[in-house]
Image (cartoon, rainbow, N blue to C red):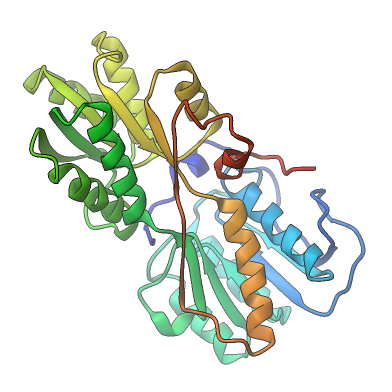
Length: 334
């Protein structure tokens, strides 16, 4: 699950103001500050950005869980600059000083947060990771996030189906060696390699930069004019691929499947510009994060790894109400 880079949905949203709330009671309200409820436990939710289409649903899920559990106090914090790892470490240290019962955090770097979170555990604070994980298993109690390899397999299986089992395909990825992205790449490779008619051309790297992804795609089209499919492991890879395909007048000839479910990506599926998306549920991550913290409070055994299902989203299910929980948004359900 872990990745050293902030997901693209974070980088496309500007940070807004001072982004640390004091502890507030939560009873399922989706408004900032929530309303009164039991304050038995205090939970610090630390994300990489606020007012963001990935992390806002995570916050809503956490509040929803608190409401169902009878209420509690939640402090939501994020760095003023999205994805600021040192800033997030400072937030962890500040949170510890307030003596929360649990820290629920998306550790966007695989190693940088471990010392601070180990210190939190030493103080008796429960540590729940959401979305990403850490290489140091002793620095947290449980980690909840999408099964990235399975999501990649879903994308590969759909690619084979969409192409009728024939054609040349490649992966656009951000960086080599990153656990999250590599798992998505490997899952896809596993699925397409099982089809003898699919010629898998391997992976090209973009540094998760849309302009670079467009250049890489253009070069791939020049080298392989009969390219039939692209698996984009993140938002910026997809944007770059789509832009390059449009410029080459080949968008209708190349099947694009991508990870992430931003509003514009979902619209592209509805409009038929891209074939499919692999969705994960940040709302469920926040919800299960708080639920797991309460189980830990009660002494219940919680698995250290809690993989969540991903959903393949196509035109056939994009408007299904059950699919909406996988969309990134800045608003919670009322």
